[in-house]
Length: 82
Image (tube, rainbow, N blue to C red; front, side, top):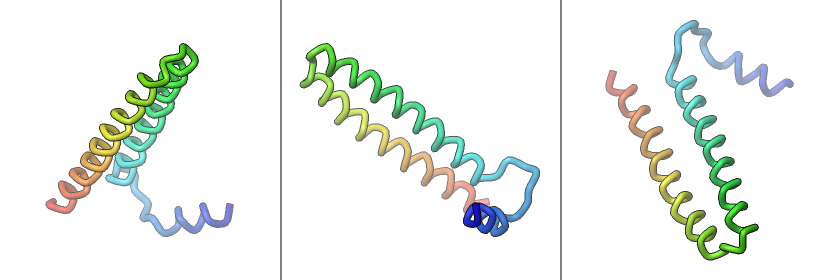
């Protein structure tokens, strides 16, 4: 695609594992984990445990948000210190 080529051309070429690569990897892990947690929540709903599924969703959403933002912020801060 046109936009993809423009984005890739704006990033410097590097053969090392960069901060951007690390952040992309973390994001992918969180997406996969989120899908797995959603599957578990759906299973609870199908078993008729709607209140438990809603509580599970609320807790995991908050925990995921705090961990994801905190981890990304810490990595960016640490990279900025070097």
